[in-house]
Image (tube, rainbow, N blue to C red):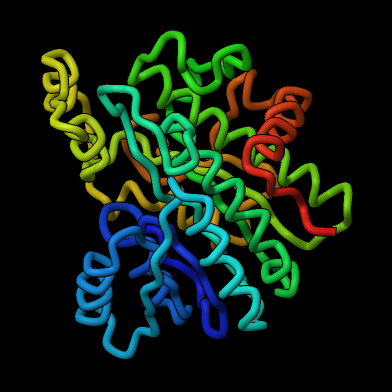
Length: 302
């Protein structure tokens, strides 16, 4: 089991922290001494997670703040409040996501839901929080991707899946986009001389409500093949599945642009894993970053 090093004095934001890998990461960071902001869409669920974390770690410093990554105005409100408080932000864990939504659905801003929630929302959040991050001595941004990104491509001609929508293809594209966000942020930090470390992770096949909440959205349900695969494919619990995220966020061995996942692909202890060719494409990452700036209206602060 990966032991999170001492996090005393650090402030962390974990998105999607009310369950699954987000709650596990928040709990272990808080247990190591960090003050953790549970950034959640539904505050009541965040309060329940806070209660569970404090039961496991008495005295843990945990607070709940509302953040809906599918609504750019919510992202702006969350980030502006945090930046205005004037406290440096040491860790941002872009963990929240939605998976395999059966019918094409749009965010409050009109983006395809998986692209908007999994990529454009975190993109806007990361950029808006940069002033607080860069005020910290050694800040880190960790972005959660997925093994599905390895077989994805970015379709700039139909980025919002308006012409042809596939739940799995849209999800995979959004996770490749997250990988490219991580890669370009690492390049940007190096070019500008920032102390910020941008890393990425994927959880393998970890049993969380991600595999059920998305497929059942709007009255949908997982397909037969999908349901069978969920039962027979090797899987692991959140305690193990969160380790790549925690390693990327806290290990001294984590490197800029490093990508971490389970040792055996779907399950196992965390290790550095290779990015797919598309994930190493700096020109593709820069092009997608520019498109995200255009779509969200959010750019890197001066």
